[in-house]
Length: 352
Image (cartoon, rainbow, N blue to C red):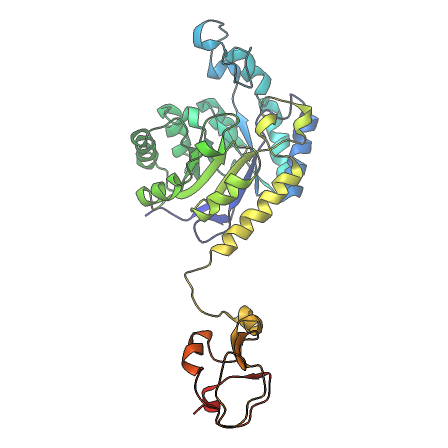
């Protein structure tokens, strides 16, 4: 049994509202001032955490321009770059990290990062990062997984581009190397992703396989609809890329949320969680005032003692304090036991 999943004092799990992460990624466009503004904006939007990516281009690849080192797909947001150029453009300089972490703490928003190399873990440990995120592209890097697991901090992994066997290998490796708090995020590694490729039904399936892990969604689709829907299927961590303005451009801007959208995600995911409730039938306390709007049997014309009830003097109407409509056919043809005024709710003592 894993320990409760807690990041910086905040408990996250099936019985708790969704934990919303604003992913800065490269949306700072190489401006520290913009990065700091993103932190403050994420905090104001209500996001629970701001997440960075900690890497260097040299730590991820080499500066080469042949074969798969070049991004040539016509549908890619990054067509025309080689990998080294893209990562240089998107990287968050390591010397910025302390100032970003400090500002996050000042604004009461949790700050952590996705390390992409073991040296990044060393840096983040010095900054007292409260958790670690492993990106889909790195979830098979055992050296990195081991370094993160051995910190003893909560670990969140994305599952894009992974078979179930590969996910299982990663999860077991993390557990075997000291990870005690794990979250598994459904992820579609396409940028932007199509909602029809989200396959959110995978979330409860993963929960059945890993009952001790917290489920979540790393979402690259436009808008917030997919993320909100994931809550109903068990997602309790939601990660979305975040930008001050898509119009400003940037490597991730096209599939990032703006501040008002992030605020809506926080609100609507909370509402989705609250709406789940429990299995319940019947009248709840807050509904009782609405009983008057249900239909029931009513005497709608004056009826004398001994007179037959007919479709002319007895109808199914609102309000709902007469007997249930299903008894109409039984009552029709019965005789009145007394004089009855129009507008009287029908009860069994009125018939004989």
